[in-house]
Image (tube, rainbow, N blue to C red):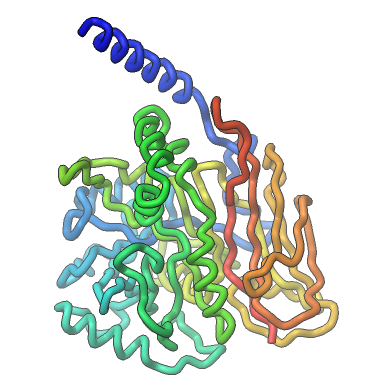
Length: 406
């Protein structure tokens, strides 16, 4: 009895001491926080999150609590997408303090789930049957390659590889995009396939939430493979979804963690737009949604460092063509990539064409001559030193949307 007690006590004290040790560890790959892009670049970088749930559906926080969390974490925009909620509280849409807030929804459709964004551009959805009919019509329509989407709703496939929610059969023509990152699916997949990793991350979470999530982070390869295949016909938009609920079911007992603040600081979507947000709701709403619908944004693992200052575009005859564009291939067309110069760890920039890595750079400023038609995107990895006993490992930091050359 005494031996068992002292062994347990020793293990508990060791756990607390290690927890104290890792609580001092800060994940930071930049020397200091980088602000919005300088005006001289003629591009502005704003960050936000999608796929967020309140206590109107599967979340634990009130709308006000979620709005306050978005303000506390410095977000510029927020998409609320409560699951199968009717009617959505459209009256809450607008600016909450400095955060531009969209009120949309996530709906069950066949065996999958879809985020339906900008739905208030049409008749509001009032029941699940209507949601199914609206999504069926949207997904079955034919889409022109250069069709403008900024004024119509978008249907986004949520967590496409999550067990029990995978799409069956061919992907619909009218699908606008998909989540290539979904935080909830991330930890659930870790529990299913890497239980030791999951349990260790669970144990260190109270001491260092960011480190716990970083250890679980995978490279989104199954989702990216689906996305690359879809881009063969026409560009689809890739998103990072927070799937934030601030809820963890521990043996069927719901616990209120991770907090919304923690979740909002893990992965973000960064839009790049040529003019500032001004605080005018209607004008700013159009700017943000237009950038998202075009794919004029990148995704980042925000918790390891602010990526603001990053840029990825095509340059043709001194004209910049941004992510989400489809254009004819011409001679002397380059892809240009800028990595923030305050990065203080080793990094590598990969150019991916139709799912295959075609070039790797390690420079802050890089360019790649486009010689063949296809869809091109960029991936940036950073090498991070984790606390003992794990050592240095490569982690993805930035995922861009694509540029398609015909």
